[in-house]
Length: 230
Ligand code: AMP
Image 1 (tube, rainbow, N blue to C red):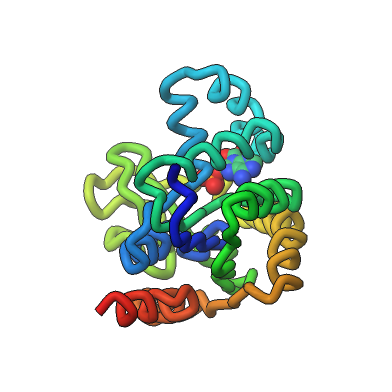
Image 2 (cartoon, rainbow, N blue to C red; image 1 turned 30 degrees about the vertical axis):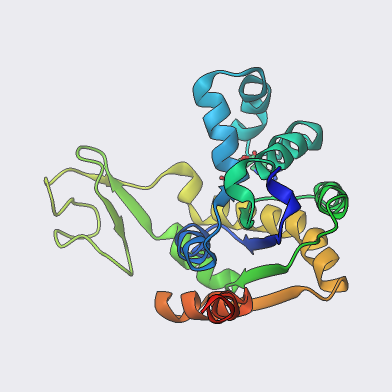
């Protein structure tokens, strides 16, 4: 049973554009635990055409949360896998208070609890800037960013093949703002749940990648674990 031993269950929260995907991979490696992203698990179910995948599809396509009763068991079952014996880095779960309570109950039944809940914080205006600056080539699909990696051929021309650049509908500024607002509204109660429990650490995500990486590892006690093992 995966959950019986010393568990290092760490949660990572972060808005779209906060850099959570990149940092989650680093952090899981530093903690030496698997990175479990509920979105990836759901996409895998869809790819395999399972009943769960089919049930989740319409919610995911609309950008809505998949109902708790579908998501909770899927993630909790993943925690019982043998590779999760030492712990797990959860990304994208819990997204609702009900999911957080179900996680607590399951961990509690094994005499353990969430070790750290980390919130990767980036000011909303920076997130809007990051997300709404993306332009893609309609021909060769090269991706550019108006500020961070502009096309050398000009704002609407691809530097790779000369094709015309376009902006995806959901990368448009107004849509991005709506996506972010929705994310913050949804996630706030869950983040506050862990804040009340005194295990929330806020990490500044508006720094260079290496500094964010170091701060997250520190907040998750990755260094402590390494020195304890040494
Ligand atoms: P993500 O890859 O985390 O952005 O998730 C992609 C989509 O999967 C989300 O927009 C939701 O539809 C669904 N999803 C992922 N995790 C959860 C969760 N914990 N609860 C409900 N829906 C989720």
